[in-house]
Length: 162
Image (cartoon, rainbow, N blue to C red):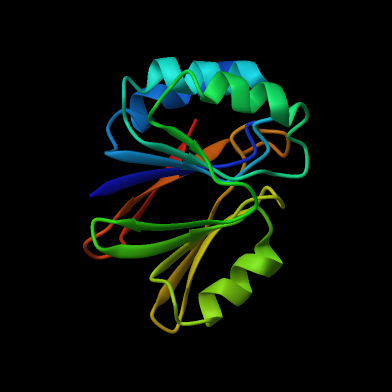
């Protein structure tokens, strides 16, 4: 299963629009927080055409009640709160916004893949038998606008720069 992982979109609908073809090549999408506005959820819900979308809250997700109301219009969009614990194609996955929490989750030996965001820094590292992945920032504030895809079978990461 091909998973697309993104984070820290921060309302940059232009970068999100550029990311949509890549997201649509995946079988499921993970957003590691800081969507910021409800219209980002709508854009994802409409643009993914029924693909599963798993979202955790970031520290800049403003109107969570309205984000939840918009997300409820799309049955494939799941808001998990601060932590998502998933099984995708037999792979145990945890998602949290914060790298320091994600590192602890990766060390717990409960997961094969742990995804996070927050610090806008793209990186992937193996911690024992777990891939800790930060797809970087979609918004491009620091110059690089990125997301990542992961193959569930071998945890192979492909970086996508927009």
